[in-house]
Length: 255
Image 1 (cartoon, rainbow, N blue to C red):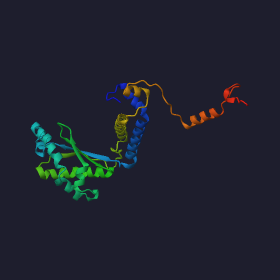
Image 2: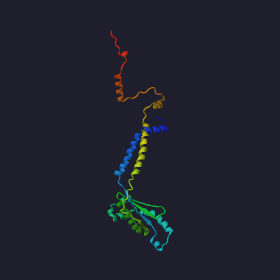
Image 3: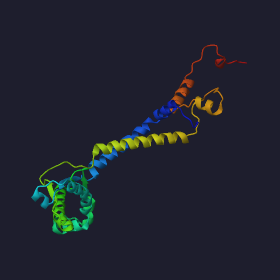
Image 4: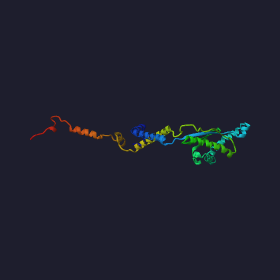
């Protein structure tokens, strides 16, 4: 097989081993679906929103200071890091032992994000149990609001909304359709690669075209391979052969 293949040869290789490709794709997609549905624990998330607003002195004078607002927006990046520090999480663990978390475990479950040029932060906690996720995110928000006053000596953090403990949302993970789609695409690429690798490693001559391509000689004759049924049929025809009158094989000469 030459190193250069045209499009028709590629399509011919794929058609020849289409059953192998489909088998790999179906098996991988089915395994991804089974793992996502039966083996992967569902993950739920609960969230709260925290706003960094004006200080108490500014609220008393009812003055809108643009510079202070910009400062609050820049402080959000600092607050996002402080939430994940032991100064906050150790307090959560000690004040809410019923959650069953350690500070190290909380760090892995907490996500903090913010929208650019806004004073709002979103705190998200993921857990296999929604009620525990909601209790945890509310606890972290409450402790953060209380402790930030001692850390920065300011009172400019307010909780806009807490997670609803009675809500019954669906899981955010695993995403079964997405996992199946990923498995389908990856297995399809992998199976096509395996097919071309097998074709590249196969150097046997099978057809007249292969003889002409490799040896540059035309095919004079071919010996067909017969299966056992065809062989038995040929033997039966030979034993039941009829002879016509006058054939030499049937004539005897008496002396």
